[in-house]
Amino acid sequence: MGMTKIGFLSFGHWRDVPGSRVRSGREALVQAIDLAVAAEESGVDGAYFRVHHFAPQQAAPFPLLSAIAARTSRIEIGTGVIDMRYENPLYMAEEAAATDLISGGRLQLGVSRGSPETALAGYQQFGYVPEAHDTNGGDMARSHTDVFRRAIAGEPMAHANPQMTGSTGSLAVSPLSATLPDRIWWGAGTRATAEWTAEQGMNLMSSTLLTEDTGVPFDQLQAEQIERFRTTWAEMGWERAPRVSVSRSIIPITDDESRHYFGVRAQVEGQDQVGHLDGGLARFGRSYIGEPEQLVAELAADAAVRAADTVLVTVPNQLGVDFNARLLAATKAVMDEVDAAAVPA
View 1 (cartoon, rainbow, N blue to C red):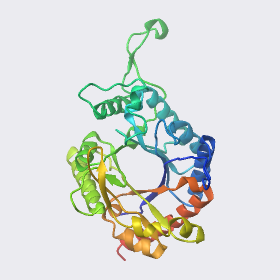
View 2 (view 1 turned 90 degrees about the vertical axis):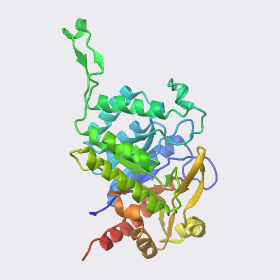
View 3 (view 1 turned 120 degrees about the horizontal axis):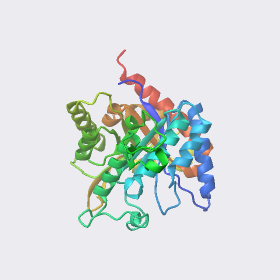
View 4 (view 1 turned 90 degrees about the horizontal axis):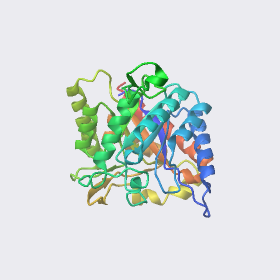
């Protein structure tokens, strides 16, 4: 493998409670921009945001990503993931293209059916009601994604009005960003969905959770998911090489503050958890919390981290910009050593 790209993944929480350094929606947004700027300065490669609705978290990613694009020059900007059940595909196509053009082609858009939300079928309040057989809206999400991807690729989406255009024919959405279709990622929770993602020609985004459990350690199950994705991709004969990201919770203990917040959690969260989600078994990946040298050895042994080209580090955003900027710089140093260890001398 080459050098692994390192991005941060922020869940964008805010709460007006003691200890929170993010008290309001405005603070969450402004701090997200500042953290992306600090991350770029420390050599981090990506700034990614979770998208949730009806909750004190980031909901509308494109204004935020555009603001980051205007303040940075190199860092990738992205989502992990947009719940496509809630999206108007053509409006989203316009927003995504505009954001990508502002950034100079740095948008990496993670989309999916989404995860369990705070609202019951909240997408219905947005005007999107799935068919009766489509109980959780998964088919609707894939349908919205299909229309979105055809729109950003410049396919005609409407008939021209001859009175306005002087001709008959069809119209694509505008503006278009020519390379954006290559930078759409699907958040896959199973091995089968990863294969479907490859068939569609989308990049693979895999989180700290798989909604299946075969009894093997999480990193090995995820590495198998990645292998199946790449095998299917090769069978499809796509011309470009795909991207693959995995999410990890990585907390290098480098000072009193990181030890204060995370030292005790290292014992509890240093192993996989198996639980129930959406009516089935799920396996949650372990957290990596400890001294940097220890983390280098542990991450170098993580089969999925070795297999991916991009690692998205989930950040405790409520601890503020300064803490997370230090955390990301320390994590980048750890991952640089992991990469160095993986390259044969």
